[in-house]
Image 1 (cartoon, rainbow, N blue to C red):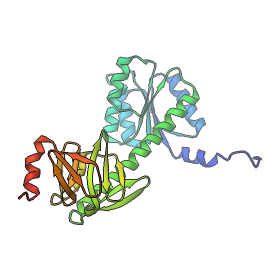
Image 2: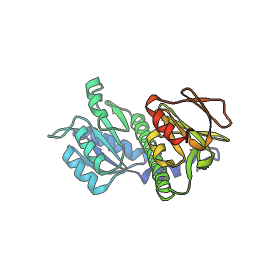
Image 3: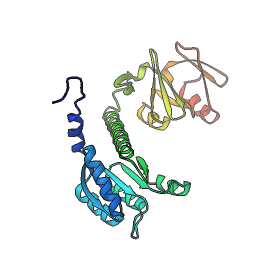
Image 4: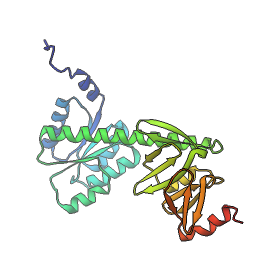
Length: 265
């Protein structure tokens, strides 16, 4: 009988049982040990392989949720090559098993964009941590991809709607083009500045520029896109927008295009 204060992990076990894992390892003792660990943790080992070609065949047949792949396996195909082929056909996370932690091996492995590594000899907790982290990371990646596809679809179907949607924490905020003052690039992010608020999103200036109306917006610098209708003044190579004190620089290669768009008298 379970004590009242004891944690009930039955739901976690049920969730893990729904996760199918493909194991590729050419050493039978190690392979069976991995199977035992995964089974003990509640995961379902849907298939096992001892070479890259077989791993690809089984992956296409069973479509697992995750693949554990030994880097150095027997046969003509390395684990890295097999992982690349599996990821090319199935969008699933791959965790590499390796006894080699040298820089050259890891550099080659990175080309397959794995979701984690397990170094041999390993403990049960090493497998548990690597698998859970890989599944979590892949889940988040799929959420972002779904969101990006959704936003792209909305943009394509609303080109004349004069609105964009930006992510603010867990919500999608509708921003009218007329309320958007300028967009600023900050390394891997862009900041969308509106009359009321600013939103930092993970995107590129090229992607933002594609979604904004050509009639209203113009690129004036490699790091700035401005709303033509919200320009208050220009002095030398700087623009002042309505309601803000920040001056926006105008890049040399953008000056002629800007001059042709502002109805200069």
